[in-house]
Length: 341
Ligand SMILES: Cc1cc2nc3c(=O)[nH]c(=O)nc-3n(C[C@H](O)[C@H](O)[C@H](O)COP(=O)(O)OP(=O)(O)OC[C@H]3O[C@@H](n4cnc5c(N)ncnc54)[C@H](O)[C@@H]3O)c2cc1C
Image 1 (tube, rainbow, N blue to C red):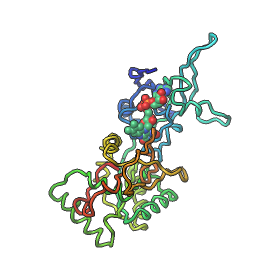
Image 2 (image 1 turned 60 degrees about the vertical axis):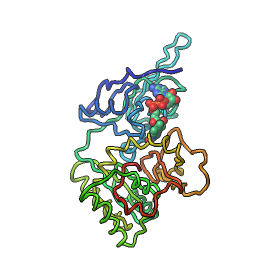
Image 3 (image 1 turned 90 degrees about the vertical axis):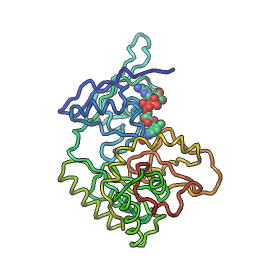
Image 4 (image 1 turned 180 degrees about the vertical axis):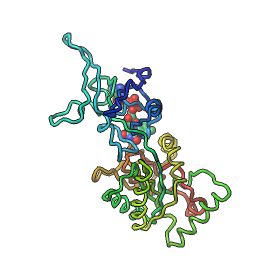
């Protein structure tokens, strides 16, 4: 059975005191965010499929977003839910789970519905926790000399007082893929990205084929963001990494929803998508399984892809196989990361 929820796409109301918004389940990500933003709010839920998926679908698939570090997965965001089920024995089939702040009883019917993939009925409305749009938002890019250094830095960040909204590091192959597919640069920009940065890395003794790109996002008041960046900057330095500013981060923010849609195109040509290792400390983390010289195998895909090379916000990962990996000179050709990681 196919059900079009497209006309149930409105934010019904927002209770500013509790930060709870009643939202019709067919609202697509961008339309939903636009309605919330018009009143200064955000839901803070950005799965890679954001552009073409609905809040009802997010709840039905128990999805996770790029900023779940800060805002939580959809299971935390959904406070109340309305589900329409077939009526039986003359009884109304509508099930309403009210939005209550917390409950110390169980099992939770709401928890049963979130992730039920439509098996328990049609979700028609969600009461979601929403947040005031942050004063400042920045995505900073960092490079690490090796995967191990990047991972250690991410772990240290997770144990520190820093509370970024996005924390992700790509392994060398995913970084290579980002570089190889980056946008063409011109003038000073090209010189800096293509010559100065690789030269600087080489002068530090870095092997350009091992470097790992990381994006870390910050949100909040100006003073808060400044402090967070300082904390993270010190940790990055402690692990031998270096910051390259917001330039790549701005591109990442603009293009982050495009990459998943490259996936099928790339899978047809050999690259594989990998699944993350089991989460550690609530973090999802995986290492590229690429580099094999074996012939292309059936791609490993997930209906709900999660995890970058190490992405605390669980987002899809695409990595090129060895045969499609960039040549050793890729980093010298350009060091301008694209937004594909
Ligand atoms: C390119 C791509 C990127 C993705 N990225 C992520 C990601 O970053 N994080 C993540 O967690 N997942 C991700 N996913 C998978 C995730 O399942 C979907 O992104 C999304 O949550 C599904 O929403 P949808 O509106 O598209 O639902 P659909 O695909 O239409 O439906 C998915 C399931 O939910 C059920 N369903 C949908 N709406 C309702 C409703 N109103 N009531 C009851 N059941 C319903 C359907 O019956 C179906 O079983 C991705 C998928 C793709 C294709």
